[in-house]
Length: 269
Image (cartoon, rainbow, N blue to C red; front, top):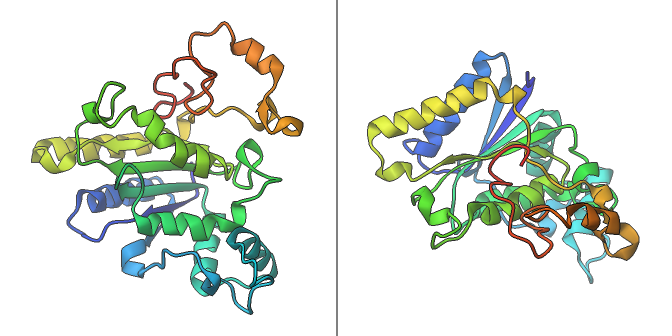
């Protein structure tokens, strides 16, 4: 069981389906004995832009300002802005982090991307990343709505494979930080569905949350598959292992082969 859960929530309307999904998660997880905290980004008027204002006491190198370096150092020295400190404390205490949002332009809303940029800034480290990332003992997942049916994000749909769309978010952000990533909860086009279909979606979400602890997570290639001395390219023995397989290793590392189906939307694929 997860002791503490953080829901990072991005929607302005309390009457939205996203709000209902957030509320369903809070109720289902609380009923299991979890302590649930919600960061309601719009209600908090959370600042999206990552700037020097995030660092108190001045930056070390104003002439050649690098946010990633400065924020990491400021975090180590306790010189972060108060809003960042609060969010990072929530994050450090959480066993599970759920991101609840409407998909905008095939990604998260700007205010949520700002949360990721600013709050996860201290986790952006060359020495500890991916399977060795600082959150390797935590779980995370995306839960989001779309404004289109599932067919639009299929391998023959106009927006392309949803697995490719999710790769930058699930691998480039969550997996990079070390999170073990649950398969996403996708609510396909709830706005045009019937009240019954929306109720069914929410009931399915509640049921899933009741059994989430027992779920496997999405597969990502471990860091030791890659040769650090050669620009983090796949090691020859790994390439040889997958040479006879029909599909590539992952969506992002496909080795010139067909993409592995559902690797970002189903556990263990």
